[in-house]
Image (tube, rainbow, N blue to C red; front, top):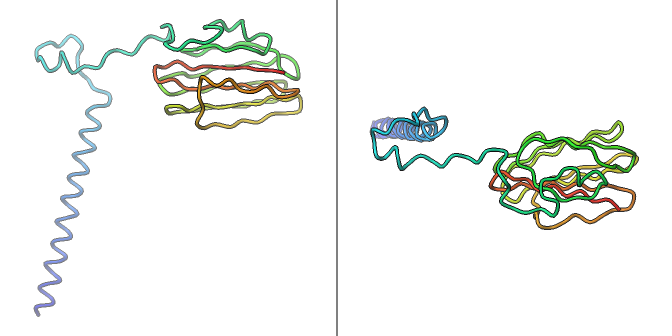
Length: 184
């Protein structure tokens, strides 16, 4: 009988532990959700804590990038298949590819994020990187290409490859992506 009472207390303790853990998890989710999608009114100045706790607004996409690129923001510099530009928002431009004209469309840029699509002839390649120090490299050749994403340094220019165009896109923490395009 003592074993039965002991087993009952053990089950009750486990049940109570699960309820407490569940409530703690629910509280953490509620706190995290409270920080996302806040409905604070920007004109509400009734509380001093509201005045000092608001995050600074994100810079507009037309803001000047905080990192410098050899060709600045001039996408026309990429027409010959060799450039280094900084982008802060979606942009599409043409450049000289290994099999004729190619198009690079940056579809999204944000803090530590860049997404793009490259079209060359009948080939299409997509790259997407999210996180500090992340990026993608796309290699275009006249008979196809390849894509790889992972840790990259925006300051390191990709090496040219014979009969290919190499595109490197790296993320920036301020919402600026650096694009390198090199051809042989």
